[in-house]
Length: 212
Image (cartoon, rainbow, N blue to C red; front, side, top):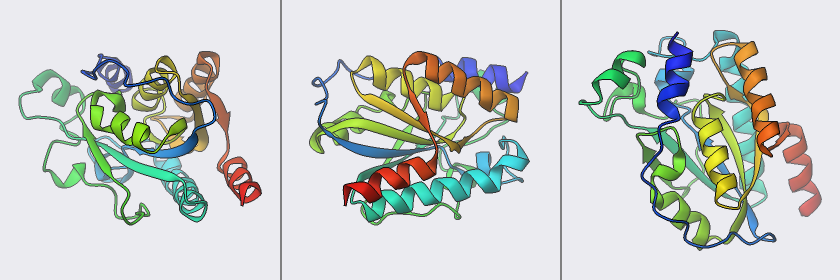
């Protein structure tokens, strides 16, 4: 029930403005790390992903972050910050990631890249914060690579929005999490059908190594 409700809430359109420009097909890549917050990736959080996925997802995401840093790729962290008056949504989310709460903070196990920006959102789609697209435009980004949670909610909505804006989109299968393995498999299949490239962190690392 909660997973379905979370996906439904995440699918509510954001308030992003019209696309700033068509992304360059030869533009660079940016790693977007979504919602690796305490409430979602700490077993004691208010709405954690499958406990069996937590450690592997964090480890894979940190490898992707390390690869992006070593390859001098643009990177950004994105997190949910829900308002007090979002009463129905907060109930379905069990009060997770409320603005200024401890649970809304990026998990301390997540590697941080010095100088990488953080963008807050209160919708599933990361593009609901138009500062994200300004960041991508300013860095001449043509491809976004996604890691984080939930695969069937915020990852899916952000990937769909990025595709609609003309970006090439890659999701790192082992660096995204969901409430269950079945939910993750179904989400990755849906993303693939959407036109998203689904690959592993090892693939991503190999690509960056060959670009050096």
